[in-house]
Amino acid sequence: MACVAVTWARPESTYTDKWDNINVDEILESNRLLKGYVVCLLGKGRCTPDGKALKETLPDALEHECVKCTGKQKSGADKVIRHLVNKRPDLWKELAVKYDPDNIYQARYKDKIDAVKGSA
Image (cartoon, rainbow, N blue to C red; front, side, top):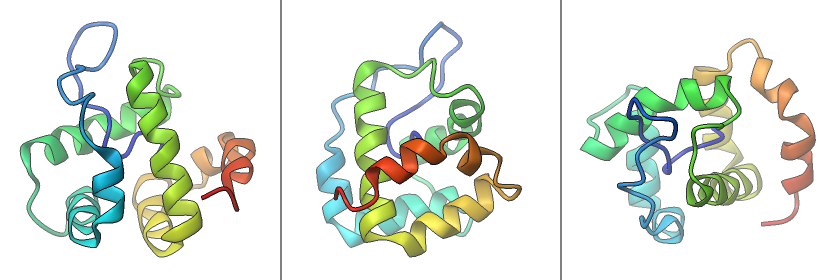
């Protein structure tokens, strides 16, 4: 979940910055847009091209602590995590079950997750 809605892959040293100017706030404020991304990430529905790229990139970003993320992607990821943890824990939990069934990343990022709780 660390890079939801903000990372897409390319073979260079960072993920493509093609979508760095996506309005993350707009996605988070729109139940329809947010659910669209979540449904895509969960494999329960169709994906937009950027949703598909995010779905392909997310496991790598989680595994490698978003080292290939641009600054904007890291900032957006922090915003997404804060929003999901505090305002949409139901979606956070669904994504965690899909992308972190063994709680590896939840444990690895526990301090960061705890730090955003209550700071919506």
